[in-house]
Length: 280
Image: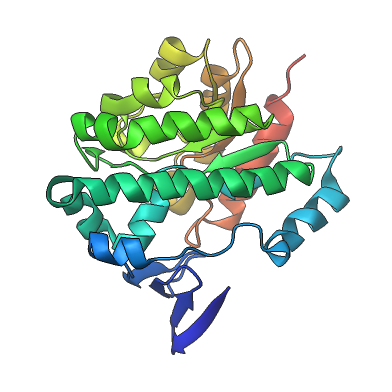
């Protein structure tokens, strides 16, 4: 739930305020937690509120058994970021470490409660969208990722698996320095193998393709936005050629289908997938 608090601003039931952008998601501009005292006073929304799952129930009713129904939950970074703000959360790793640990624990607990609800409604796959990195590397040091986020990531992934859910883990950016930890946490599929950040699909396939499925990675930053359909066809064929051998590959863009993507390029990617992306 959310309520309008300005011409293009919304107050979430979680207590943070977002400002609209040209994309589907707004950006957080106000957050409710600054200190441990704020955290101790904070009460999150009820994860079991029945109306929260109306869209899930409708999707399962209309599509289960014919196509995948995937629910977007989170793991250990997005919710703390929403509640503190990005810069404040990253600084709190040093200045308020117990606060960061508390927020991560809250995120694990709430997302596992949400997962119980969606699993009970027939969902088989969850997708966690917490981004840990940008083009040059992780947003925190590998040491701090291991100390503050990796234990919770393992707990939430273990909880998802105990509910019988498959997990697609999304994080764009250059995740090479923390990739072993992400794989070891127990995910089933890694998304999106971001080429703009130096993530090479073939190299990831060679190192981890026997342990997890891979999802990606037709470039959406430049190619799908500024390229030609013929260039998209060639890149899609390359992704299929690299990703498909041995199974365990889902073709997609390198992040999302954002508002600047040319429709004809998206159509070219999908048509190429239909023609060349079938296992015999």
